[in-house]
Length: 393
Image 1 (cartoon, helix red, strand yellow):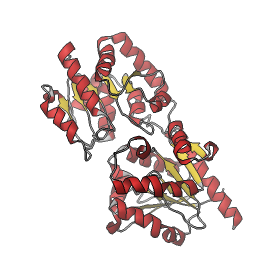
Image 2: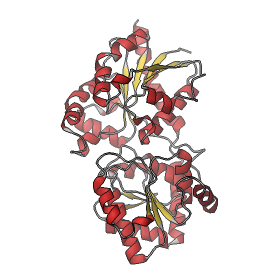
Image 3: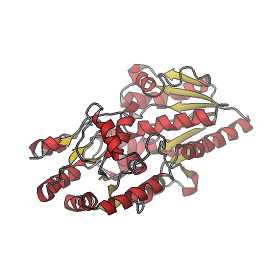
Image 4: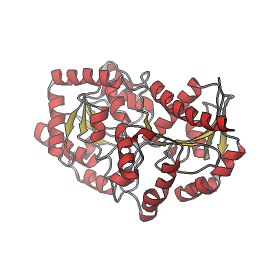
């Protein structure tokens, strides 16, 4: 069995503060579990070490961490480090392949070493105005050059792959789709009353009936605005006893959302506890009456699958990625129409039989998404590219 020295880039992945971080943790765990014969050289900042390595791989012989100096911590300086310093650093490690985990944010070319880039999404092409001029220019005009030259490309969904074909002109057959997985041991159906007691005992937990949405608080992309307005409609027209629970780190630019929340007559029923643990998210979905994902855009939408795996009936925005990920296991609404979202939420809240039906559909749908499969598909691409170079030496 051939062994390879594989670089694993941890930079540009939010260091534990977003959904992308969950992907990194799970891909890394699968790589180490499925390929103990390889050496994995993790490259990142101290905050990346703290988020992904500390207490997990420090005593694993085939996992090595290499720290990027803190002076390259800012996004612009970190991008510079990838373009200017990473190639020589990777060569000094005698790597056989280098895997970029956030290929929509970082790029590089390494002479003699194949680069495999994972593309989670192409937000910069679909939501104009999300980034400042300098970052938008880099994403639109610099990064694509490196993505197109990567020896291996993966996309976390067919939708992201199709975006890469449309916006970058990359042939479809050069992109391997590696659908994300769901931790079936953590995100699984649980007795709602037991889960509710578990959640209530956690910091920032609640015990009343609630509607759940897990996403970073980012306006307008995650579209909490439609949800807040729909929640107000439910309170005003149906007098539901439910609270609204939205864990997630607050991101810059969310001020317009909070202005609406502070002025709402139902603000005391809206809870934004910030960044929480995966255990909290699992208990929340297990206990929720209804879950929701009103995003304007996603590369995959992992919390949708996690909610379904926990048995939470869910309403999602009617966007292409959710047609792929959720199928007919979720009710849908048109973004920008909070009254329609309120109507779909009310259907599930008020109809026990319908809620049970979508619980069943969701659990069945979520079972298709496993991290074992995602890790295997990605490793196959890395090993394939590494083997080509090793054979040519």
